Length: 117
Length: 109
Image 1: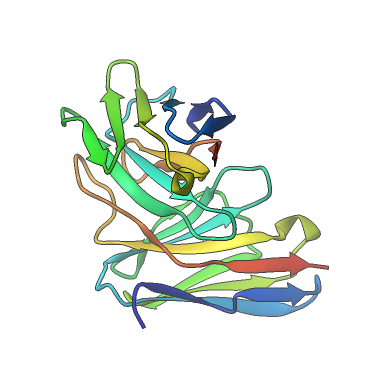
Image 2: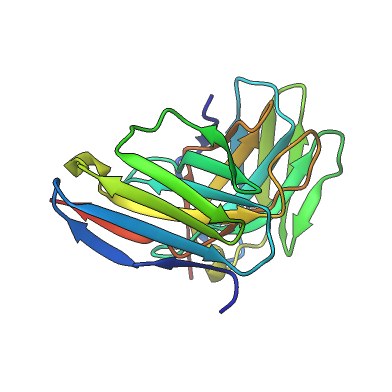
């Protein structure tokens, strides 16, 4: 496997279910990201992890819970979601998180298409 | 905080040129450009840094005006493969990173 992989690719869940999205990067990067992409809306950054520490949490509801056990894996735990949470969830990784004048190309996974019924 | 892109959509004939603009209300350290084809993940095109040179990716180039907090993406002699949605991503202080509203580009034969 190369690059950034995400599983599952498609997920349908009820509002009372608990599920998890998984992301794995094979690039040796230090930083990983979760994004939400809804129809006709820009990509929304949800969480950023650098060296397994969360460095950014953009006011995301607590029904989304990230976990980064090591620099290669990132999870997004989902519980009691709402229909408006239906979207494409993209994972990305980069060599390091942003700093002043740092180079920070992000590599994206294929995404998980989530539908909440 | 989210940068605004213009135009929202553009249709070009093969070989024509286009410019996509990205404007932010905040001071920027860098601007990223990505292209996303339908049903696929965004793919990196280039990053422009403060005080850096104009960047180039094949026949696509971009500039970054730090004072105006703007970036422009120039697509020259467009090809069918250029079709997709183009996003700018702006990096401000700390780890604040926001993607723009997106510009849908369609190149027709």
